[in-house]
Image (tube, rainbow, N blue to C red; front, side, top):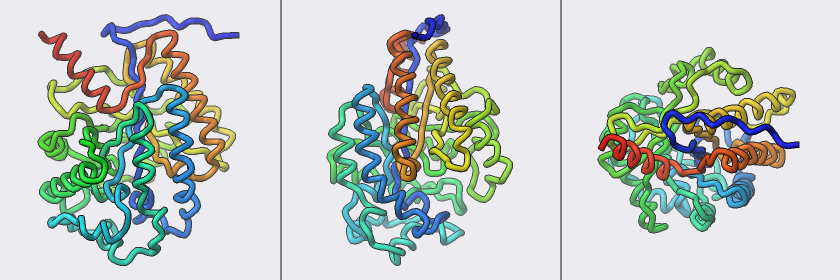
Length: 342
């Protein structure tokens, strides 16, 4: 027996947008916080998980954005060394520096660090956008904050994408969601049209790693299961009417946790409810995660993702909800805002 139709309420008169972005980073994204010995299996499973996710996206017509660390485009540590920018980040905390790690990696196993063949699979799957997660998993808010080093890093990401795959990166996701308006301005100057900003709730604010305390982490965990944060459904508007458009995140899709397995229905129910609400109100719902989050309990995580995509499909059929990449959403939002302003 089907669900009763939901009344469509759209102040803007536009159909809602469902956006998915993935932070594709392999070990580069966790090497300074998790020992490789504890993460090897998850990283190897990424090479299985990405094709399985692509199959689901193809099945449900999902246009996802894969924000990829530039190092992942490469073949080896030798290529990484050859492509190092002349200006490197000089983090006060040396553990943050990926180049220090690449000079003496704990393992040279390719599967942990490089995956150009997966990037090619993404590009060959209809509707997928390959985007930037910076070249080196660059931390914008860690001291010293150098805009010049950030610019060199981002230019390096653009160069490797162009040289190896012939693509122009349009969307940007900042590692650890750290950025400021100055970093967004640099992205605009380099031609990016979309970035993923943070929800406005206090626990999601951009901050250096050391300032993300237990209270923030606990609140984010609780918010995955209970209605803690508000304002996670975003209006289809561009502040200032210029590039890049901030396609704000709505929710991080937490992986299945055996410890919290009894709360899994709450998590999925919360996400499906938010998708339905966005569809009713003509808003943007932006879901994100890392491919390595699915590296443990892959089948359970894929089953949960399928249930989310089925809800999107239902909202698409009932209310015309659209799946758009970050760049697609940004381009449509800015174009629509300009038409309305004319």
